[in-house]
Length: 168
Ligand SMILES: Cc1cc2nc3c(=O)[nH]c(=O)nc-3n(C[C@H](O)[C@H](O)[C@H](O)COP(=O)(O)O)c2cc1C
Image (tube, rainbow, N blue to C red; front, side):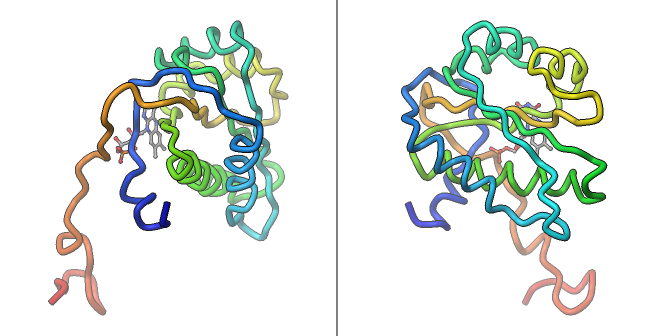
């Protein structure tokens, strides 16, 4: 899939079904995350691939749809390694979401619901105290047709030369 088509097609899909994710596809998704930019190239992030049914069930306390797939990718970071750790998590997460979409799978950026009980989820995954567990990406098949959420039109958000000057 072409990059621009992938960007337009990526959507938060919460209605997921399990699907086989071959090791080769998983590696391509993780490699997309690995290749993301990071502040000063410090690369403070780690990926945890989860396919154990019990672990998936425990993590689904964050959000139900997690239990509907057979593979998860969690993104953790060490804030002591870089002041830009949060941006680095976001860049890797988006790269992986695009790869997931390009390969025909569906996912959703689970962060808000995960952070409500971050300490519990860290224990489930054995993430050290000094690290943050920020995101879980379920990798599944869409249960129905997907659509990206409505976006603001460019003409409303693009300014030319100075803020407040509309696009011609
Ligand atoms: C930082 C961040 C945190 C998010 N956390 C969650 C979450 O915990 N659960 C969820 O279902 N979606 C979460 N999302 C997905 C957003 O709700 C979604 O991207 C937004 O509604 C726009 O929809 P779209 O992804 O289809 O464009 C999160 C997205 C971002 C960028």
